[in-house]
Amino acid sequence: MATSASCEYCCYFTYDDETEEYVCDVNMDEDDYGRLVSNHFKECPYFKDGDEYKVVRHQM
Image (cartoon, rainbow, N blue to C red; front, side):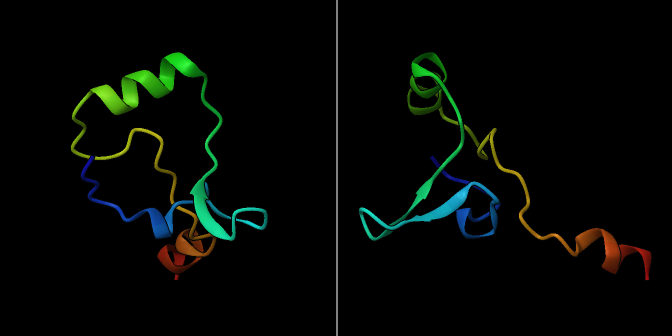
């Protein structure tokens, strides 16, 4: 799945201490996951920008 926005900037991309790696921590059920891996998305439908200061910079 190719994404136009990198997972590194997504708020769901978190570090898992047990596996010692970064994982996508979006809350989805089996049906959602099945659609995600079976479809060819141009960008991730779950991407949410994790930049908390984006709005502030826009207002300046």
